Amino acid sequence: MRQMEPIGTVWMVPTSSVLLRLKESSMPRLPQLTVETANEEQRELLEGTLKQLGKLPNLYAALANGPSALRGYLAMREALVGGSFSARQREQLALYIAQRNDCTYCVSAHTLRGGKVGLSEQELLDTRRGTDAGDPHMDQVLRFAGAVMATGGRVTDESLTDARAAGVTDAEIAEIVGHVALNVLSNFFNHVAQPDLDFPLVPAHLAE
Image (tube, rainbow, N blue to C red; front, top):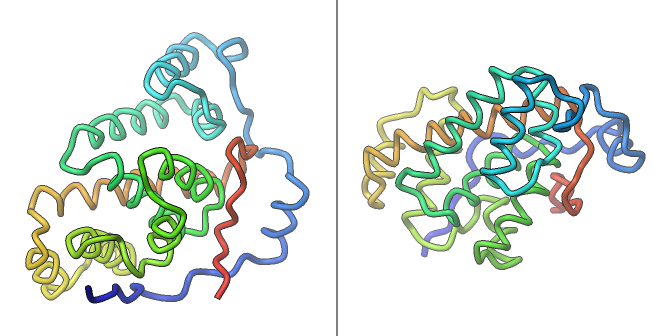
């Protein structure tokens, strides 16, 4: 199997301020709402999140400060769950995108979730590195997601040709862009809000 070549630039090395936050657990920048502290609109969304996920991660608790943002995120997430990709493949996409965006919160969350859907420790690491997703089809799914991120969606004809040659369908191509958008939203929001990490810590920095 030909190994994937990482797309674009090397993943960012955390700055000293990022490492300091990991060590000292800085205060969240936005309130992490609960069903008890939320207003009526926020409470309805938080209860819906609990039903959908079975728990209320701090990402969602902070995103609920903007009910329209959480509502849109939940709707898109639910729609993509019903799409072409399996739970395992969705976790690989989310983990790969979080790694590229240097999002420790989401790398931690999707490492845990990826393990729960059957990804081994080595598969999780390979997915983060973008070196081997387990099969040629998924290799190209991640490569295409990386190309979308690296080019702002202005992928080359060659990228599309390579993806289709590996069996990536037009429906999957559309959904890959959707997964990039969904996960960029959560990654960037985490950078802004800095919610408390409520998953086992997996720093986004990868050792050489």
